[in-house]
Length: 123
Image (tube, rainbow, N blue to C red; front, side, top):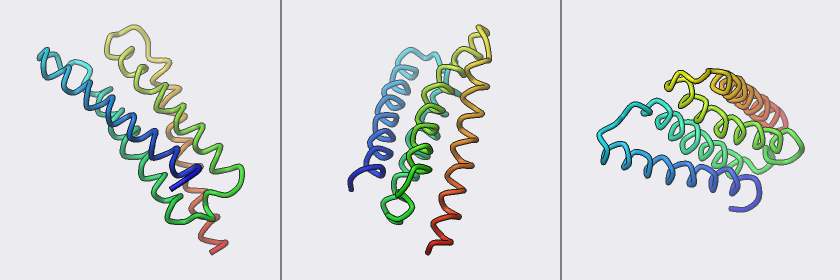
């Protein structure tokens, strides 16, 4: 695995490791207040990013061009913004970052849908 697929999977692994560490910290302290942010880090970070990478690896022509690179940027930015945004929302210090991260995450999935459709048409 190389290139774009590797970047997606490597980012997913980093999210998994951070998420696991965070889960251990929550368990050790008994404070699970931030578990929604932890869950989003695991789902959007580990699961989604890794699945994107595996798709791009399985369908190499889908990883060609500008759109998959835009997808990578939007997906990574979405995770990086939504997780602390959820923390901020839970702590009642603002919801703006969670909202921006949510829009970026939806945009990421829409871009991915476009990539899948375009690669299927090229087929």
